[in-house]
Image (cartoon, rainbow, N blue to C red; front, top):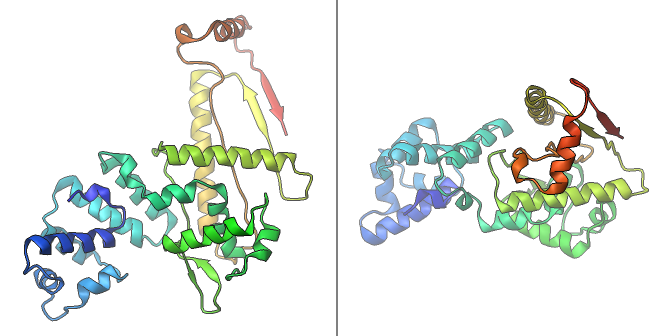
Length: 301
């Protein structure tokens, strides 16, 4: 049984116990509790599978009973942190660790996650649920979401998030998020993430062309810099993203608005000029004829 096929440690534990009992009939859930050193708490394993928090001491016991070693043990602990992390930073760090430890990173994303990131409006609806009270009638949501999304698609989005345990009903019967944030780390280059980012680009295009009064701040820079300055720009972009995450995480007031940020930094010339087309080579040559230290800055917005 490959632990890297799992991203949710509770599902992993349940399947591990079932498979092992199939091979060893005496390895019941009660026996699992005995091996964990809890002979008088027979329901503990069931409670964990159903959502009970696992302490640092108990995670070590689970590792020993299962016999996990090295990176597999680290991956198991990262799954626990990804599930139980109290802050977005902890969960993002855990996801990052899972990506590094997983020998086949594409396996880290389950089919539901592919479907979730397959449409831009799923993450938008997820965020809107913090701002709006939405039950089973999505007509008000359909009237307010921008760009427009059909009620049928919004209903399907809610069903998907329920299936993924990303939302649950509050005491008033409204759907609310169960986690603080959804994030994909920089190291993740899966087709799922690329597809989602392409949709976000299209979303920005629609916002740019809209004549409405929605909050917008569109800015574009094109410039020429040294390699050293290029690295500084990349570092500044990373710091900006970290600052935004900090502001969002530290915001303790009731959410009132949903914002969307796209940040893109890329080179307009190829690194290896010898592989460029004739057109690209001509453009590069023209660039190189400029006076030393001359900088061009083209700004839009």
